[in-house]
Image (tube, one colour):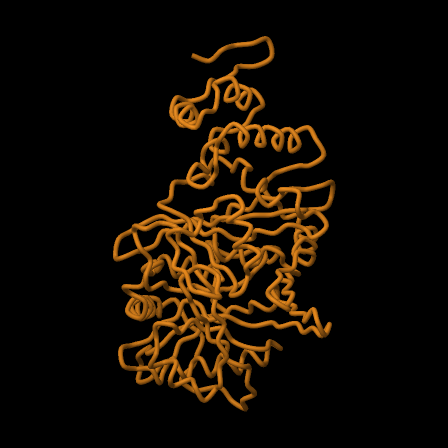
Length: 420
């Protein structure tokens, strides 16, 4: 029963987390103090898969919670008003990759990528008007080994370079989520840049066995390698006469092509007409108000049609409008900023690789017209199509997917560039 005091009703800790914490030699008195401080049950024990959850860990959570609620820092969900501060955080939190410093630049729409993902849970820690740390999750319903599962994608972990080595990267993931965003999942995956050993070391510091179920390769970060082709933007005098904007009446054919192309891959969500239409409508029904931001929709979706049949379809996300990468060589001081486009919602008919090859070539020309440097295309599982695009001289970027669960096992991941 709840215990009523003069000021409020105190809820006792549920028996499940209390029993778990007892098994880790955490005294009931400490659990009571954590609940009295107002720490949510989910924050207290929801990370039991990787946190130590011993007495010292609970003490740290209480200290952080007090700092967040009555102290010098504020922990909360991000808001639209945070756009400029969120961009500033990313500009001041470079990744160290060997001799390179890679800084992700977001803006003018700081949240463009997260709008594409839908259902994102994005948390920040603020010191006054300065956002000093962030972390996010996106829940996805996907297939793994042919079975339906709900998973979470971990992303957007950043700590301002002036606030590092204070434990903020750990603390930002303790923040209690909004009630409707805390949903069950079978596990979490994340994607790391090649050579980002700083992140690997950070994880191992807190969780020595964090990569125990992750494929290991000597000289590289742990994870399953996933590659994306980067096709240089090209100048072309005219577009293909077979390429036209997609229309609602194309949905059935496009859904069939997308599902045929990616069926059987892990982390793929089979499309339906309603699902693809919602993606291209950007979640809106009816006439859209111009004040709402647009990131990727019908204006960006095209089909390749011959003899009245759609043979290929794809969307072109102008990623570089709101998301760029500045790469600086720390030894020479030289730097360059790269901006690209990305291939989304693509598929083609069996044996018809010429159709998507021509569509991608058309997109490379559109990429040039947008002033971007390259088109990213996830061709890992389309070798025949990749071969037809070799004349465009694509580069390859490889990152590493970490999935900590031994079961279900991810072996052939589908790469949706919304989550890249």
